[in-house]
Length: 402
Ligand SMILES: Nc1nc2c(c(=O)[nH]1)N[C@H]1C(S)=C(S)[C@@H](COP(=O)(O)O)O[C@H]1N2
Ligand SMILES: [Mo]
Image 1 (cartoon, rainbow, N blue to C red):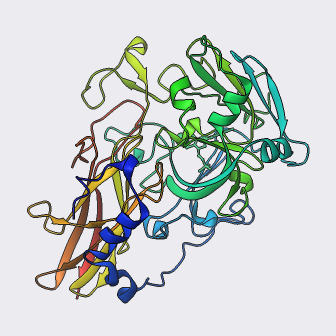
Image 2 (image 1 turned 90 degrees about the vertical axis):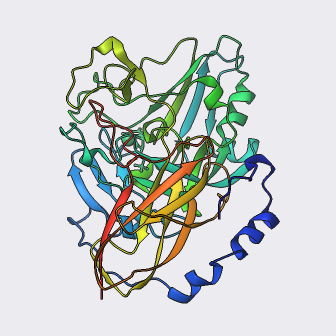
């Protein structure tokens, strides 16, 4: 079914139940989940509290989630990826932690986590965090940086207060243009004079009510590597704006110029470029919303299946919603529309599933293609850019049907 007719803002739970009941609703329950072997933990304590993540590097710590371990509707903490630019702060004491809001505000604020909890409404939302470089492994020529495949994305339940409410309490001045985010992680060199990542968003985006200053993840304290005790969650934009271990939000009267705001960091060429083309620094623009994308979480890549299968996964599109997901098992020749759920809230990914009958035993690829509310559709092949951002080409999963 297509969600073409769905007005996101006017969306109601009863309507959702109707849509879910309309077609293959019972199938998920009937097939259940496969029990799959876990990828062995890479080493002792590095990935403590994480389950089956693939380690990309330990200095800084970076680990992604294999696609089949992203099968849950809401990503368990143990399966949320980790992307660090620097060294995790040792002091993560929630009792003494403070967050300062300053710059272009009427009243600068310094708030403890207890202050945040008592002064502002506490909300829980399912929100997608996706690294801007997710999918970088598929660029040719290769782009430098973490070689993420598809698993630098997650949609956990985050609890905290709205960034908007806190900014409003400080009183955003008309001169406010952009936010600058700061945290207590340190440069890998250990040199305190070297800046760690500090990114931000336009003030209009910062004031969107989806954004959280979060102190809990899936009903528990944040995982240390996911920003405990306090982080920003700003869905739909490169994960780098969702600052972990956050201590300060500087409201600025100009576009933030912190570490990794300039050069080619989280920036894209202002025009389509050829693979490998040199792009002048002044021709880069800041990457904003993440593009429409989907992931196949079942079957697992390389699975042996029967001829009748349930294919399922998630789809999302930064600042938009997904209106349709199609599946092909014949290399794009024909497509089957998947059953697609509405998001549980804006900023969440959408779950989808399709029942496929494969004509004969043999080798197949499952391709998934999402189309968003503005009509943008995932491409078959990635448009190259120098640093390998925003790769939203269709996810392809191989299987052998008996
Ligand atoms: N303080 C701080 N915040 C940070 C980072 C970081 O290195 N330091 N990495 C950013 C990047 S690039 C991403 S993709 C997300 C990843 O969030 P996660 O590690 O919880 O999955 O955190 C962002 N927030
Ligand atoms: Mo990232």
